Length: 569
Ligand code: DGJ
Figure (cartoon, rainbow, N blue to C red):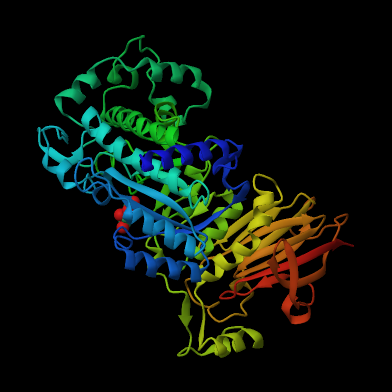
């Protein structure tokens, strides 16, 4: 009875509070999370799968992440831990996450490791795993059952949904005021592995039947904006009531489309039921179809970019298709998932120092909602420089002093980059979706890029090694460099990043001056830190630091924010 009263009061409170965490869309390709009425960027990281499975691990990891400067942690909530016996729920693992997140000033995105985690059903409780009669598995062509629950089974869905809903009830009852949890991931890297689709009798029967009208109507209504892949796949001569292979042709790619539909409509029922209890933004994450693999070699039917229309139609309660990146060529993966109808969110990316640069690029160029390297608890906050010769590192005396007083260490690249992003967060948020923000990512292959600002100025941004002044400039491989450019006012900018040198010309002309072109000079440059939207000068930069006004530069290895004003003459 007492529990019931508490639940009713909590539900009423939840209904009456208007400042619910939500996803705010600036347009269909740009969105952000708004908590207590305040938009935020998820400057975050995802925990390794087993790193937060005990209270002591959570305590340790969250304290570390707080020190590293994150504002958001992505943490799994595991079905097997919250429902160890069928119908008996134990939310203590979730409570530890809430308590430690609050203690460490972190927001949380919960990952629902329910019926599937990376295609497999390994996080389902033992009672579920053992009862294959009630909770059937998917099958290969040969009829072999795989450790992947059937996406067509009502029993699987109901069991998974009930547990997920218990989590949402718990959050509603225990987190509606604090709003520690700001988003939910439904399942994890869903997708059929080994084969492109489930070949069980039920699945095959559905595959041979008409494509559901919900989908065919959607395809007609959205004809113009469909992903080019799906447009191409549609058979123009298919009649009403066509089967999957008639509508999309008979191949493994159509089997993938079918499998996608079963996952999307399944996920919709989980997400919809959860949101009816406690309406948090929700997303699904994708394992990529990279390296020339075919459906089934990669998890078939996941929330892949080329299948976005099936997910939009089948799972309207899902806000974002989010990309997990463990492959090379980050630029192309980010563009593939920052679409006219999908904002960019990177809930996982391989943990490496380069993420420091990728994060700047994702937030500055792609208006990312969040950026979260995987297994973030393993990342060191400091890099030990004691054994390095600092003389060639182009560090100011102050920097050297700071390193010395910190026992010979500097902030590791990702921690340094996150520190800048946290400072600039409100300024970035104000410029999301506008032309007053852009970013570049430079590397060994692409050593130069340009940004044309709304003031008609061309900023040519090169890798700082291109000057030949810094140690490493003669190395064959140049490390990644990146910066965000924020426009503060007329011809007035911030550069946030590392390893870049910026020159400025009139965008009307070419890169070199010709008669009639205005010349652009550096009026003022200073290294700054930002607090509460205000710039505070750390150092005035001129002379050698700006090459007597010819450029603005943040050397490689240094993470800085510089404020610079240009003028015409
Ligand atoms: C992607 C998954 O989503 C993560 O949970 C993890 O398994 C990583 N791959 C790799 O370790």
